[in-house]
Amino acid sequence: MRYIIHSDGGARGNPGPAGAGAVICDDHGTVIARVSDYLGHQTNNVAEYEAVIRALEKLKTLVAEKDCALSDILVKMDSELVVKQVKGEYKVKHPVLQEKRARLAQLEGGFRSISFEHVFRAENKDADALANQAMDRGV
Image (cartoon, rainbow, N blue to C red; front, side):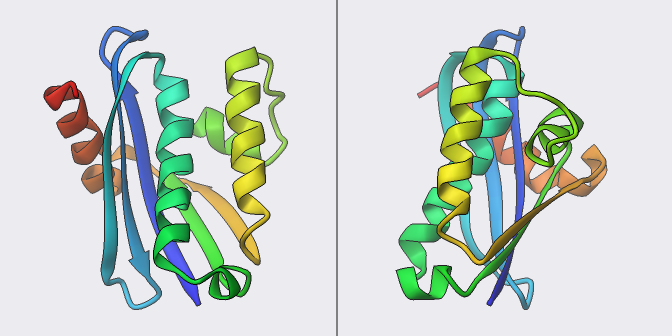
């Protein structure tokens, strides 16, 4: 099975009130889950990582473990920094981001493959809206 995750995180003020948003679709384009979580006072980069982490955690709760091991995941996000860090093109220097990257790597191990693609903000509107809704709720 193949899944596509559109994820986005943001912080107002950077750091400031932060939110994570994601839309998870199956290989037919059907939305199977959404994530919209308030993250408290964080940076935008922490929020970007959290959006992917929470989407993968959500997917793992929806798909049987044996099916996860046979699944390919494509993550589309507008954070060029995070995409380049997970691809190994940039080093992850900040200690908090190192922790987030390690958590993401741990989750990646549960799937057959995960690839990351940088997309422009216009292609990520639904995930952006979910992240902003989370920031608006502030809970």
